[in-house]
Image 1 (tube, rainbow, N blue to C red):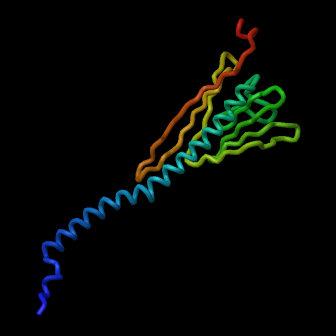
Image 2 (cartoon, rainbow, N blue to C red):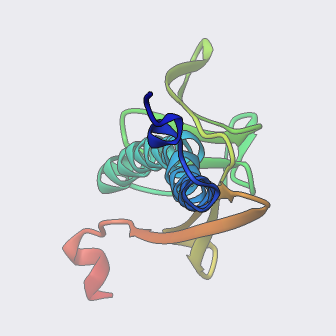
Image 3 (cartoon, rainbow, N blue to C red):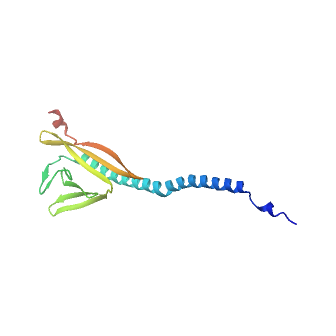
Length: 172
């Protein structure tokens, strides 16, 4: 007659297996949370940062061409949400409103939108640096909000772009 207990597990072996499985499950759940929740959130943040940098680069390119930073032009004025740049042949208007930054050219027909950047969970603000009544630089402050578990982490950045002045103007 065969020994029936030969193929069974003892109570101690079952308890050790359950304890090992519990510890293994806890370790795997941490890795799973990172893969399912934190990695996609990080990838979205990287994509938003890339979009923000594209917008900042466009502002930088326009500032390199700018002749002046007018406080007003036609119906438009530079304020917390609007920024005007006189590029010589055209005047550019940057407008930040409700997570969208828009670059437009002010023409005889009104605004002609040329680019638009969607910036959710972000802020895009500028401040004019002036010397008397003339603006000579734009300070650009940006931030992204990274939502990590129950916290919101603010990732700030700042840029300053100066007007390029002709040599005779710098000699004064």
